[in-house]
Length: 370
Image (tube, rainbow, N blue to C red; front, side, top):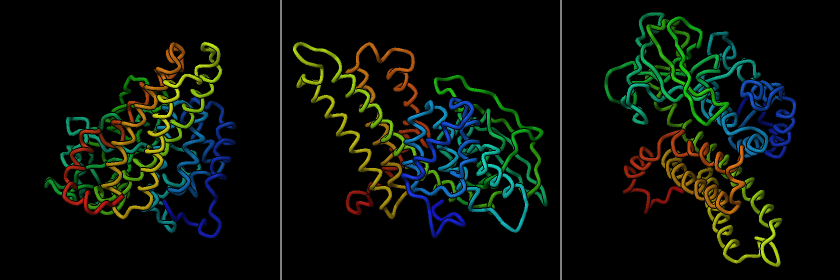
C-alpha cells in the first residue's frame, strides 16, 4: 500500500487526497450508498495510488460527509482487502486476482474481507473452521464467515481459510471468492450500521479454479496480520477525525446556548469536562503518530485499538451529556455513540486484543516499541 506503481515520483499529498475525496463524495449519486461512494472514489483516482499516509485525509473527508456505515465499508476495503490483493497482482497476467483488483481500484466492484468464522472461532483466528481443500487445479471451499462488512454488497470476498488441519500460522490461505459463485449464500445482519452491508457468508462446496488463490498457501495468516495492523491504524485515524468533528460541533453548541448571564461555555465545570475530551482526542492522535514510527506494528496496533476504543467512547459519551436532549434527536450523538461501539469489535474484539497485549507483556515495558 505504501508504494503503488506509477506514484513514486509525485505522490499526492494528504491535503490533496482530502480535497479529492470531498469532490468525489459530492459527485456520488447517493452519499449514503456505499457502492455509489466507492464508484466515485474510483472515478476520481483515489483508490489506485492510495498510501497509508493518505488514510487520515481520506477518512476524515468521508467522516464529514457520509454515515458511519459507509465510512466503515470503505475503510475495510482500502486498509485491508485492496492491499492484500495488490501484493499479488501480476501485471502480465489476466487472472481473477488481477481482474478483481483492477475493477476494485476503478470503483467498478467492491470487496469484503472475510476472516472471522461463523461457528464460534470469533477473534481466535487460529481456530478457523472454514476450509480450502486444494486439489490439482481446483479449490473446494466449505464453512462460513460472520459479521462481515460488505457481505451483502461485495462482488468478491477475500476469504481466509484453513488448508491444513494443524494449528499453526502456516496452515492458512487467502481465496478470492465471487459472491455469485455456486454454493455461496449471503444472509444479512440487522444493526445500527446502515451502509455496511453487514452479513454472514456461507460456503457449501464452493469449487473454484486454483487461480483464485491469493498468494501461496501457508502465507495467509502472515499477510492477514500485516494488513489488519494497518486496518486498526485506519480505524484510529478515523476515530480521531470523528472526535475533532464532534468536539467542534459541541463547542459551537455550548458557546451558543444561553446560561445565566452568559453562555454554557462560560461555566467552569463544563469547560473542564470539555477539556477532558480534548485530552482524550490528543491521546488518540499521539497513539496514531506512535504507530507510524514503530518497528513492531502488530503489537502496537493492538495497543492502539484498545486505547482508541476507550477514548472515543469517553469523548462521544461526554459530548452527548454536554449537549443534553439534542443528543437523542435523529442522527444525534446518542446514535453516533451506539454506532461507534463497533470500534471495540471491528478488527479484533477488545478482549482478544488484551490477550495479545498480555502475550507481549515481557517485552513491552522495557522495549517500548511505541
